[in-house]
Length: 58
Image 1 (cartoon, rainbow, N blue to C red):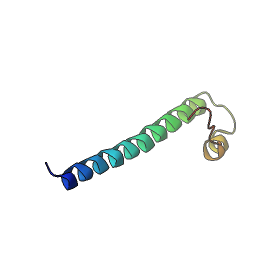
Image 2 (spheres, rainbow, N blue to C red):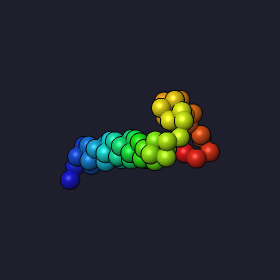
Image 3 (cartoon, helix red, strand yellow):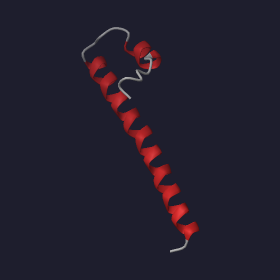
Image 4 (cartoon, rainbow, N blue to C red):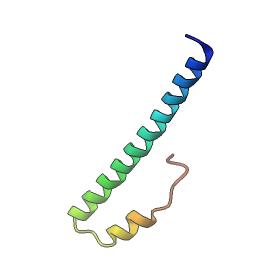
């Protein structure tokens, strides 16, 4: 395997990890808000759209 092939493979791996992170994050957010919606809590949409990112939890 040549150097260029290794670089391409690593790049694809990093891209795949990034996409997976976004998908998992979206699924978690949707699931949490789905539970809140099922419990009929108020302001679900607003909190879903405006929830700030907590760097301590990242």
